[in-house]
Image (cartoon, rainbow, N blue to C red):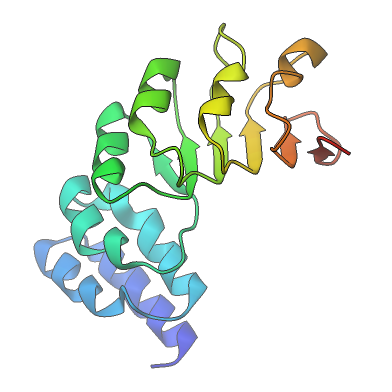
Length: 166
């Protein structure tokens, strides 16, 4: 099936959002198109997340950013072996992130809430992390807490991505 047709078909099934739609979407979880796989990943909040994770997300070869809003979301993804790109939406506890995100899996992290009072040194718990976006501006001291191996660190006021370690 053509990429655009597959994408539109997936979008339609996502809009339906029923049990039958979830069953139908299983046909597309191995589709080679990144556009289709991104659409499937983005839809996990439209269905029962635990079930969707096991029936759809676990089979995706391309791991686009996935929005998580609760510690339970992180537990669900942890049961799959983790996820490479996470967008943490809303407030969070550092303890939840460091305990529930699979450390060796995470490569990209976006935090849309203000950074915690603990700063950003906790990012050192993720050895494969290469890109971090923080949804609020940080001062130089806090930015300096980002591990040296993180190649890209961005905040809202960044005119361009700051490449650390250069």
